[in-house]
Amino acid sequence: MTGKERIVEYLNSHGPQRDEDLAEALKMSPSSVRTRRHELELEGVVVAVGKTLTKYLRETWIWDIHK
Image 1 (cartoon, rainbow, N blue to C red):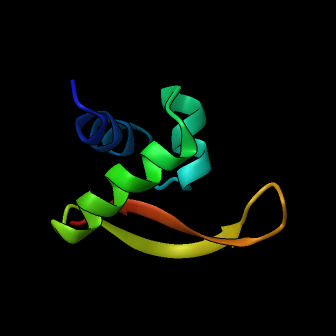
Image 2 (cartoon, rainbow, N blue to C red):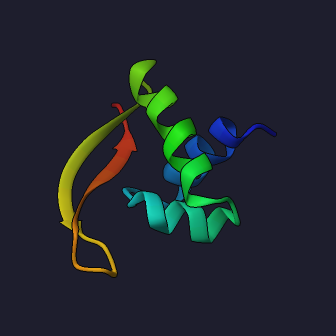
């Protein structure tokens, strides 16, 4: 299963997530998650649904499957 497929499957079963949450849950590097998720965003598969804070108190997007 590719990284993009793993991200889509995880979002489908767990709902909206931050990149850092995806990286931790999927045991992928944060940069790999950002790259794959960005590809999914360009393909129209995922969309930003809101903002929250990272564990370092920086703003970040929450991503979900485009419905």
